[in-house]
Image (cartoon, rainbow, N blue to C red):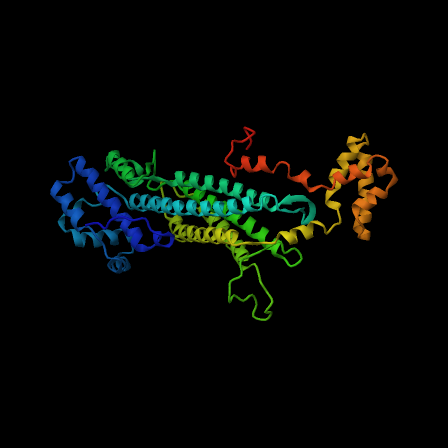
Length: 441
């Protein structure tokens, strides 16, 4: 009897045993379909179902001689089945089995990656809600810009991985396609109903048209989606690395009991997970390039794609599965330092409110160019002298003539920057109440 099918974990998807088990499913399903057409007698189908199995070591031994993996597999299966094996692989070519099985494996891998993205989003959502109104400095070009909140930053992560989820779901649909169309894809020796039956049982769509292989633009799109999700992992790993720098230290990776950061410096706590994720994202981009180069095959087929895919698809899916798991844990266990965020907000002694002062001056009738000149003049003094920006503005006669002290003080109120938080959270799906706006991308 064929062993009952169970969905494997990521590494197990790409083992020889699982690959051969998937090949065997396809071959037996094809025999079932051919029995429905009157080609395979009931007794032979029953014998195939009861006896069909394989031995990985035996397949490897046969392959060492024949130098063909599918022939080695079929020879080993026939050793168990006996004379009824003459109906196995009838009208098929190797790629019918290889490509359809590969589609099954890619779908299985995509399902695990989708679950990984959802775990990242759950961790991000929890952090976003907890730190919804925790103020921190926003940075552009690495320089203090204007206030934001750590909750908004985490809401941005949550939203980005919503797009990652959509990309993986689309990639899954793109590769969830099988073929059993025979040599060069003409169905010359195999009725299309066999292909339809097998694909339906495997929860794949039959290819509308194929050559001897499924077209590799599908696989390239899949690998590109993985690389793009990996780029999002890298984007946030790098963000947390920057925020952990000693000069910033607004967040910190979890540092376990007994963990050590340096062989030489006992004080070190390094962002090793973030650094690891950034490095691994580079691998995914390389795999995507190899997948794109696999698209151009000779005529109806060659096998220049095969050697690359045997490396890139297992490695890319296993790597991204690991990366998503590590990112989810990084976000979930991230140490957040609101007091340090507050302290960093005050580093520039009020300069981060320069735009609000500019806008208040223009509201008083000052031209934008003149308002910019007045604000920048005092801002540069604050930079160079380390002086308090609000005090300099209050002491500037031209500014004071337009903005009394009480009105000037309003420009330094953090709440100005937080008034849109609730709408933003609703917009990205972090609040259950209905969105206030419609049609926003």
